[in-house]
Length: 126
Image (cartoon, rainbow, N blue to C red; front, side):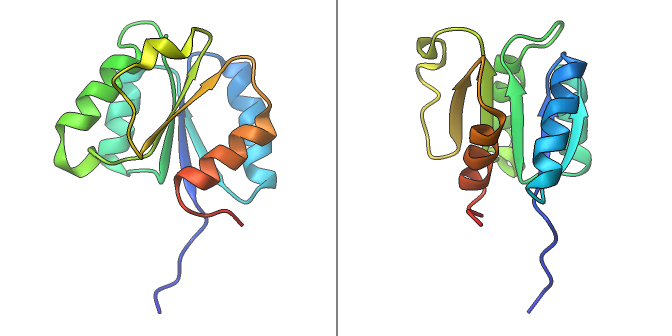
């Protein structure tokens, strides 16, 4: 049976303080985390080494999370990549995104709850 490594999450958010907070929480939970601050960097990182789940800020400078999401869904290789949106806006902003591979977490949020949602999104509850 092939060995399965720890789950990997990519966080795309323009807040470096949030990166540090989430990195600590994910590390404690046994999840490897990488982070980027721009949408175009998120697309490049996903193309180079797809994570198990992408935590994506909806409002980043330049290419926002909505455009990143649209581009990911256009490609067969990333069409079902689990995405957890982080947003300070109302959930209605994500109307039409509902599928089995999308979650929306409203800021402010509990980091331990985000870890639970990420584990659920990638099918590893433990």
